Image 1 (cartoon, rainbow, N blue to C red):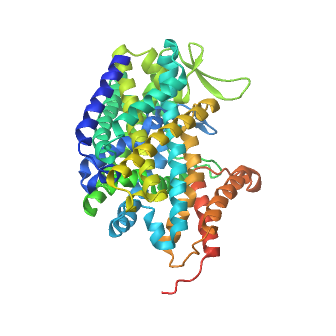
Image 2 (image 1 turned 90 degrees about the vertical axis):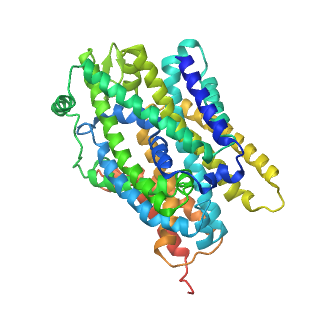
Length: 502
């Protein structure tokens, strides 16, 4: 197993060496604005999905919500994704290209001044660091639990080695390199997904239509949640999905860094729309795989029960609860042929690396450009700028390791909902800032009050979220937390703003 992983990584290094030759700082930041839009679109599928999607989305199908199986309810969010990507393509991208931005947070500087610019950059750095390390933790934990624990390798060593791998192939080329490595990794991830689906269908002697019919009978195909008070209510999920996409893609330097590396606006827009269509199709296939995994598990003796102590539903297979995030790795590595297990691991790593390498590169770019102002410093030559950039890149890898260890100590294995919840707190101020800038003509004072409001808004959102059940007759705040946080930010900015003089 490890030999296949090592060979895979060597291929990444070869690609990185080839694409990183003669790379400059501009290559690292935006790929010299010469990236192929089709490669960017395809590679961004892997970045958008990540290892969390690979494990958690299939696992959610047979998990229980208050009204029964969660089933295909994630499709509610993907409808919102389509709306969000259309907004990015036709509202945000024209703005970014018109201003010829390298960092999208320069928009905030041009609109409101330096404090808003630094505040937006800071919230991106916090958001992406937390989100990326949570995703990394989940995948590393799967590798650790199912493979490396048996070899006596400590978790911290596993995390450090994987971060070193990512560091090595992104160190020189940055965006110029990851446009190609993400394409390779996305191809392997989708190939692994398809192989797993086909194998399980053949093993169960089912056609695709027959399998969906059985899933429907068992309640796995539930899509729309009509309980208004539930976190999964369909309108919340669709609207929340749209705003999650706008915030986590359109207002995120990592994601937009790849889009604005494309030379022409029209090609960048084609990239986003193409991405949205393929992404929805791939997510549907992940849900199909989830249903098949639960059918396979129950056909091999797994049975549902309710834990007498916690009151939670479990799916016990040979005495082990495999519900949620555990079902895919458990079945792939313990019950399917070794070849399928190897394909699972390669596909899982292929899902892991695009989200992690892009985050590391984008955080380095944002810190160097937005916080240090490195790109515009005339007192530094190209070599000194590169030295600083490499130091920042290494520093973020160390920060990633620290955060992964924090998640390891928290030991939360059902993490996709947690990531969306954290995103609601960290991306909300960015949503409020950009919305205020785009949809009003009012001006903000260039002082610390902007930062204060962006810090207060998540606190108010947390208080509201914790008490909504009591204050609003059983209503639970879910994915709409991001919108609420953005609204608090918007109202706070409105309070300190003044009419435009123009």
